[in-house]
Image (cartoon, rainbow, N blue to C red; front, side, top):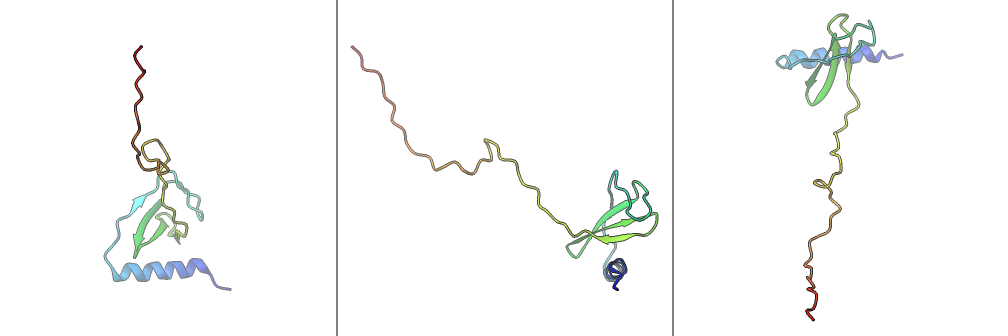
Length: 95
């Protein structure tokens, strides 16, 4: 059986040794899946791939789910508005 945690650790270590140290950011409120410590997880990016790492126990993992935030549909951002068309103003007739 293949230990995927080991392969991620090897991959991350190889990438880090080739390049300069990436900018690491702590994730507030995150809990480590291995040691259950809170506020010990850092997030960083190597070669357009995101990783997370626990500074307490050394747990490393590749973040596989990437989603781009979608902008909420409002009156300002509504894309379903059709092209403008001229209107005719009708004045009441004077009697």
